[in-house]
Image 1 (tube, rainbow, N blue to C red):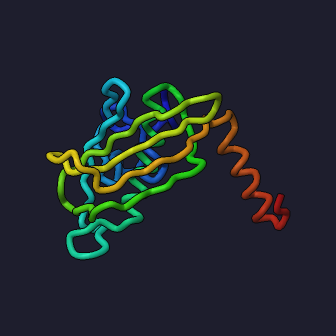
Image 2: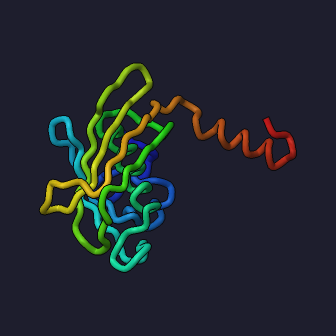
Image 3: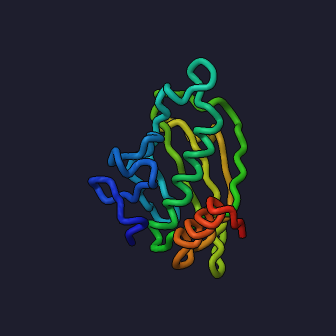
Length: 158
């Protein structure tokens, strides 16, 4: 399924912020669906550090949001984030190979409940975990948003 018409050279969907460079600027590699689990290699570039050698918590949350959302695309459904909760368990290092894993905990109607962990590539212990709710995107989702923003800019908030 084409998520947004913009994919990397290998066909992985990219968000609007990464389309122009043709790769994920957050450092996420190609997503792979392995049975019930989506996995992706990821490396936090030191530009996203918070403390010495430690990833910013905002980067960690953004990576979870990105990969968890894209994992539904692998299953043939485009979704949007409804909620996301992140637990920071240990510092996430920069410039190290990491793995993010996503599982579908439940799916009913338009609702997808997902869980995820991020860990060092050679260690199974999670550094952070996330859970959240994604909703299947309805036709016209982004068009409705643009119409609402146009009305807002014209001083006619809805």
